[in-house]
Length: 563
Image 1 (cartoon, one colour):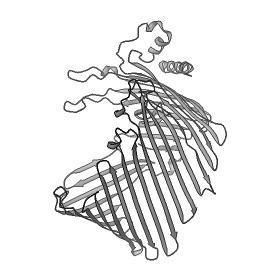
Image 2: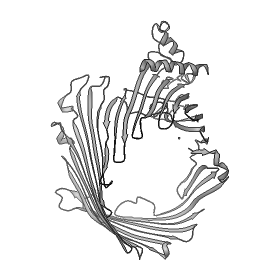
Image 3: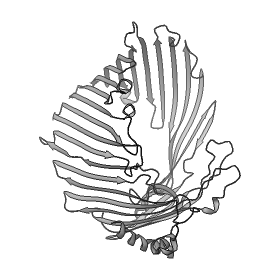
Image 4: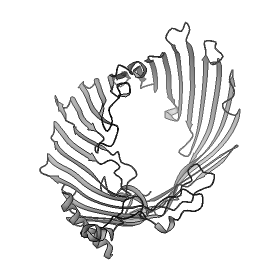
């Protein structure tokens, strides 16, 4: 406890110089919940398969039995699953990591395996085994966790990765004031590897014990109903080897000597920072967000799994609606760079922009348009850039989706077009011929619903093309299907067919693929149901040995019992 107070005190002075497997259990209504219940299903499937022209990709006959169940006790859910076939048996009970978070009014406690987030750059969702508490009485905000963040694992002789992990334990504390709309939180996290398990055995890769002290200031300040600010600044003192040599004259420096008593400070220690801030405005018809982020190269925290680091970006994202919200526009543009410490051979500069438009002038018609542009350029870093290796590319993506929907008591008509165009443009003339590519995807679908007869008809057309300096592939075809409901919805049936022609530019003939599927299901009652699915594929090649013509048929008949 004395060490914890030391860390909190040192954190305050340091900032002056640095200017989730079970849901939370509500105990207040636990008497209203069932003490025990179980529900799930058991299914039996008989599967048949046949193929001509190619080697079988499945067995001619298969039998499968599966069961899924969820046990519920006072709101806690534990799932189980079992699967048996004539080839293998699988059993899963994913609660090998069990945790619970009971709560009562402003108090929440955590036990077992939990993943909790105090902020983006400190304790940010890393799973630990231990205990914790969060309290929000009035304007007071408090949180604390303690536990094991990583379990000791031994190295296996025949494993590809022959490095063992050390036992890793630590704690995190959050102290703050405010509400959900306006608050300021001070966060301290201290996690260490168990150095007593860092002894290297003969023939084993050396895995040093590490230590991490992270402090962060996380805040949200609401100026009015329309304007608020969010920000976080964090510093991570990371030691990659607690047994490394220390600094000369460490005892003579009052700051370092005081810090070394709390967390190891030596030649492997590095101080890294991360900053996030945004200014937000939102009204009925307009909103915007201006955000800035800067994360040092190599920034990491033992309370998080991964960070995109060595980057600095600035983004503005406005959005507004017009004509009584019939027209909605949302866009963003951002600038990003890396190599913040000029240690890389080159610096990458990126411009990221996007615009999304949704226009619904009348109930029966609407259109969505999306456009994205991602541009990346390089400039010299530590070394001069070679023209033939310089990365200077722009990727654009355009999507257009108009739709027409006409519905009445007898019929429903839905006509939808989806057009997507993707292009990579290499602005380096020396590499453009090898990297540029262009892709086009078009889908046109018409859906006719006959409401009185409970029948739906589907017609569709598809076209895809991919081209670059080496080849140009295209595929086009049609889809037709019908589905119908019988016996007041107890019996469902459907038939679908698609015919696709595909090949490269210049081919005299094209490959043809026919896909047919038939499906049917019958609901006997609330607990019993039957299902039948049949799939047929016929691939007609151009006659080359690499692509043989073949037929493939698969059927699946199943029974499901629900409890």
